[in-house]
Amino acid sequence: MFGKVDTSVALNAVTGKIPKVDIKNEDDRRLKEQTDNFESIMLKTLLETSLKSENALFPKAVGHDIYQSMYKENLSNQLSGGFGYSELLFNYLKEQKDLVTLD
Image (cartoon, rainbow, N blue to C red; front, side, top):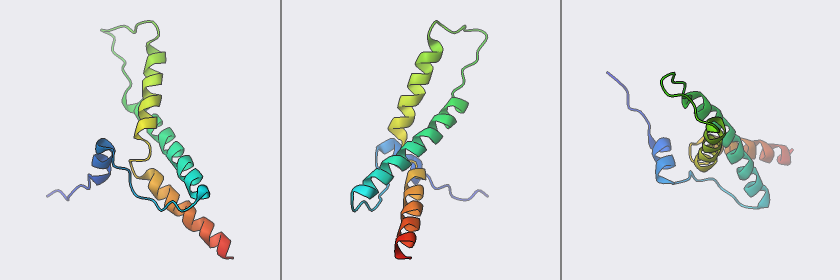
């Protein structure tokens, strides 16, 4: 009834295995760093949406929003590079750069 779900990307993120990208030089390293940063921004947005804690029974303590923001920022930075978005973007941009270089 249900198709198979590919959980390899999620499992890699949990286990700390980073998807493989072909980094050959300093430009590739900087590109990978930027694609990881982009993935971090996407993950932070996802976390902000999914971790909203609006509960009328438990009022927010002083500084709750600051701590929550810091937690989401740190979590998104730690998870970036392992979900696959960075790898896809890196490979796409690398391919585009190589096409431009050939012209």
